[in-house]
Length: 258
Image (tube, rainbow, N blue to C red; front, side):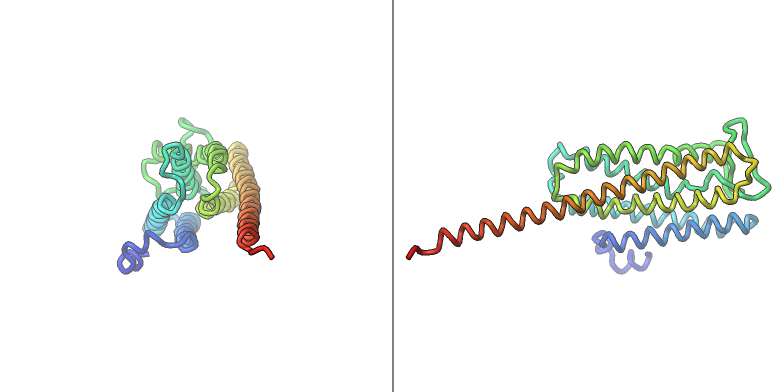
């Protein structure tokens, strides 16, 4: 990534969605490494800190570039009435950031857990996290609010974007990141459920609720993507048929009568 910044410079801002998704994937791999370090080597905080922060930095930068590309390549967003689409896009992408970054902040699977029952009964913390009593509670609830926010703003987004068919394909490419973030969160939640003791029943219920919400979100977005793809295909067929019809009509008008 540093190589791209140094050598590609401004060209990095026009990277394709597929390239940017690969960077997000790499950033999440680093996050998985940080979580694995917390699970199996909790006494070493330096690898966790480096992998966690660098993974977060990569995803932050890439999502910023996605927003830049989205605004630059999108059609018909110059009018003020389409600002709601841009605002909705930004809120959804920030929700992605919270889903990717804050997942597993609430969990420490080891036996030397620190519980702050004064603040919330079901909160657990990583040993490498500082200011646990305030910072971890804030990050926990930011994460838990991300999925409902995604649902609400996705509904607003779909109701508005259907008026701008020229941007459908571009929007589906950028919101593929939403599906990736949701699947990522689902897999990590499964890991937490498997490694959490059954005695923590209240905590397991909260994790199952997060898992269910993520699965519903992934399914809903998949249905919307299929609908949009089919609509784009129908729209293209109509345009092609209209072009052919106009071409035939022009030829019939220009053909000399015998």
